[in-house]
Length: 227
Ligand SMILES: C[S@@+](CC[C@H](N)C(=O)[O-])C[C@H]1O[C@@H](n2cnc3c(N)ncnc32)[C@H](O)[C@@H]1O
Image (cartoon, rainbow, N blue to C red; front, side, top):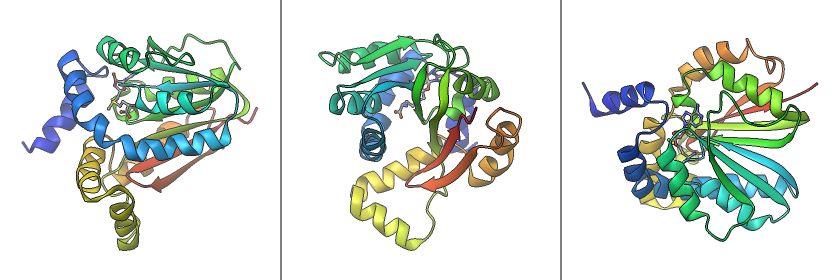
């Protein structure tokens, strides 16, 4: 069995990253993903000046903290099914009042209906044992007209050679090389998004209001609550 297949199988079996995995992730993959996630934070900060944001599967907390630091008018909640990840994220967030990290399952969110202004998630979808339930929870807690941006890795994310060159220039060779490898291990192949993930979405309340788009190292799925 190849190492890639082994790592992907382990991720499928363990929805929550186990403690040793969280410690290794904090020292490795989380660092490589900082640049691509800073870009996501920039896009969110540009769009959102106030309100409540959920980060599903917030891991070590980098993305939530980047958003919270720059926009004091936002309250960011990171939710993760790994107690060790929550512990690491809380440590990273010391002194940042508007970023809170809680242990919890994205498939059973501790928030009221129609109460959330925005949802983001990076690199977590491929861990979800019940993705349809998570999408259902996103629909329930979002306010009408609001969006969820769900990013997960895609090994064949690049559109063409020009896109590859742009990534290399923007992120530097090391992040480009390792980042694309990390993205390949944390996500799905393009065909899997276009078949299995699409089939799941087509059975949710978002069925008429979602889009998939390749961007950087990710597949970005935009969900909009229309009513
Ligand atoms: C690969 S990590 C990504 C962490 C972070 N978002 C990042 O980009 O670095 C996936 C995270 O999703 C969490 N996770 C998996 N299933 C979950 C669920 N159902 N609810 C909440 N968190 C979940 C895992 O525990 C893990 O911390």
